[in-house]
Structure formats: structure tokens, C-alpha cells
Amino acid sequence: MLTACFPRTLPSQWEQLHQVWDRLLAGSEPSQDFGAVNVSANADALHVEALLPGMSEEQLTVEAERDILSIRAVRGEGENTRTWQRKLQLPFVVEPHSVKAQLHDGVLTIDLPRPESHKPQRITIHTA
Image (cartoon, rainbow, N blue to C red; front, side, top):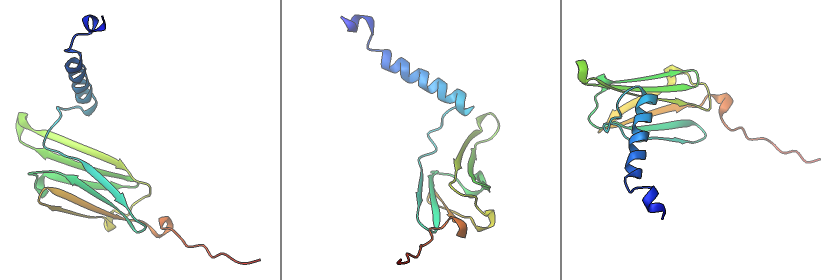
């Protein structure tokens, strides 16, 4: 029987392996303080929402460099400092001075306007 070869504890051991792997890749312990990052787009802009419950503006850094958006959060002091960072590759180069960020009730909202060269253009159809 296969169950004799694969004990029921295998899934939890796989979960532990994934957690170790995630810590190695992230360079820090995973944190439950940070939630999902959602990205949506329309013809004029990209809209990013990051769930950051309990965070203040002083704990957050948002940077836009060319086509990369970086969100970084730091919580705690000394040995208890926890850092979280998310980098998103954007489909266009942004102008940092045009990016707007707002934190309200634990939700960080970032609006990144599309440059004119990346907005959809209507093409006129001519009859022959």
C-alpha cells in the first residue's frame, strides 16, 4: 500500500520546506503583517493597492524608477525589526513626479499615470 510508504505527515513537511525556501528567497522571516498587492489598469493609468494593516506613512517607502515600482515597509526596532519589500515591473516607464500614493485605513493606494506614448491611440480607417 502507498500509505505505508508516504506517512500522513508528508504535507506538513512539504509546507515546512516551502516556508524555509520562502525565507531564503526573501532574506527574512515571512510576516503576517502584509497582505495582497492588487494591480489594475485602464487606458490612462495603473492602479496599485497594497494591504498594509497597522502601518503608518513613516514606516513606508514608495519609489518609482524607470519601469520598477518598489514598496518597502519596516516595522519594529533593533532585533525585532521586520522588513517587507515588493517590487513590481511596470509595462511602461513612469515619471516619478506624476506618481501619487495615499495610505488610508491600512490600504496603500498608488496611481501611476501612463505616458502619452503608451496610451491607446485611435487609428483612422480610410476607404480605398
